[in-house]
Amino acid sequence: GIRKHPRMIIFLICCAAFLGACAQLLANRFAFSTTVCFAVAIALLFTVFELVGRRFAPAAAILLIPSLIPSSELLLFPVWTTLGAILFIFLSMLLFKGKVYRRKR
Figure 1 (tube, rainbow, N blue to C red):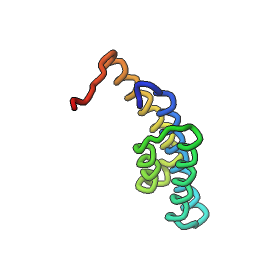
Figure 2: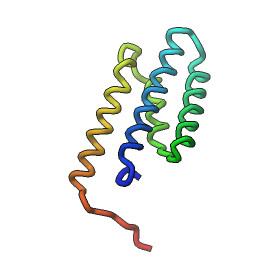
Figure 3: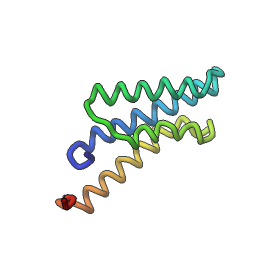
């Protein structure tokens, strides 16, 4: 999870944001099918999941966000997404330091 491997989660979010932005740029600039571009991007992200040995479902959702934002914002999307992930993960680790929540059975 996030507490054990924060750098890996940040890396996966960064990859997802980059792949999503690239897919949308390809669809916009070269008139490729948006569906095909995002299907290839998702396949690449799942390949990254397998290579690093971690799965993080919110990263797949982040990959799809560039299909909703204007193309003028696409180049900065991976930067802002990565910075936001770093901020939220750092704050959660700082504020909830040493707290581990276990489910009762």
